[in-house]
Image 1 (tube, helix red, strand yellow):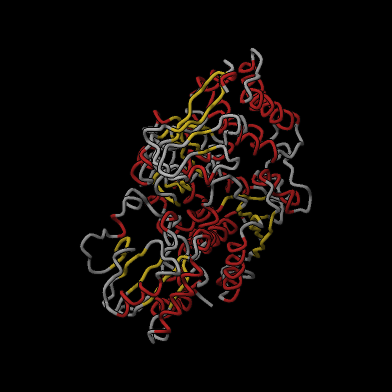
Image 2: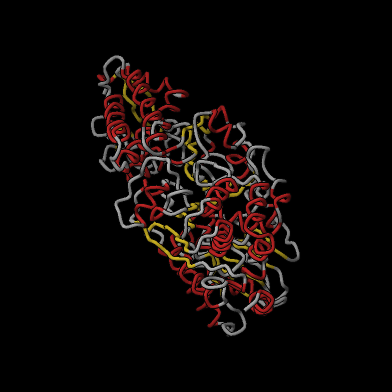
Length: 616
């Protein structure tokens, strides 16, 4: 089958999906939507349609996450007038009211309406492109999320899909590599190595067979970029993978994905089956003479398997442990053969670059950091979700304009970028441009794109300990600097938090961190000290409180407390007492400093201070 025939079928499939004047309902059923109750909402929507006799005339489709995770479950309704309205927080309880209002009475259900996606405007509702969270974005990798059925290859084709692969065949392998090189695309898995250069190394290695691998082992706490792309638009990555395989001369491809992503695995399996049915994977793809088999390999969830040599060891059936480089994977990788590894976002960007051209892509970002970057915006921020922004955008724009600022009107104390391998950037550096160079200068990294926002009440020493406890547990133990270094750092942080640290502890922290950065075998050990180093660099005063024998104490301000009892109910040790509608008190002997009271208070009545340990 050729692409002309596939596109003819795609136009027909799209007409059935988005026929002008045809009412329909789209339900966001990615993992974030499902966690918020999207499947229950879909069931209730279908029941309401059936009750009103609309089940045959109003189809219901599942789509991926459009990035507005804070508003899940999200439902888009197209009425008889062709206007598409996006609704927020559509739970099972109000599904029938939404159907009655929008599809029976012809009046949008304004109480839950978020924006107009397309069609005639509505008073008081912004258009999709005018939403504060959407306006600063440039959606390339996320171009189809929320707008196509991820289980339908033809929807992807109708929106330009596999045009990039066709163009790659026209350019030839060397021309394809040159196009990717000119685009300035750098690896989005964290290291930022030039993608075209990496492909060129694998292309020039004469050994056969060659392998291409998609690294979908997304293990950073708070990160969900790759998952969202694979759940909402798997073909964007698969097309990029086919292009990469063609460029380097690979014959077999592996998608290494963690088992904790069952929905992404299922949609990838369906997408590969569809590719085979249309002759887009396997032998002699589209009559080009190029053949590539793609296999899914599920990992057990080890964070270290995000490192490329540990990942390959896992595919080979060995324990996931890194190896020394050189030789690099481009020369001796999977099964000791030339191998190219890119992450999900890199490959999804490749498919767009080959479709629209390198010159188009260089119009985004900065001179050294071209294009866009996806981030998972999480933490203590108003609007959490998946975003895609041009490289070089100020951190402040992400936090305040896109994310809506910190919750409860509090100040932004720090932003953790790059996951447990990244660093904590303080609030006074929010005007920092987000690109590889500026983040590195600030002591952090781009990483795969996790971004966790922390408010003014966050204890940065505890933050450093949290991320270090993660990397300590995930260290494979192969090299001494990482295995013992993480353990010693964690022990020292525990003594600091307990108010029992001896003199010279900060110097010890610095020394161990530098040793790990210089001598660890892989990126896990080399970057694990970043949370400690950045908190020492920007928040040393908090360390000083603990070193002076002071401890963190939570207290309730009587003037602000409304006596709602939310904190008392949430407290795991029963340390908070007080009558309803009267100021509450915290028993400092029973308090375990978990911070739940601070999180549960709606009136900003809970604060923390440092006091002498004896005062407790």
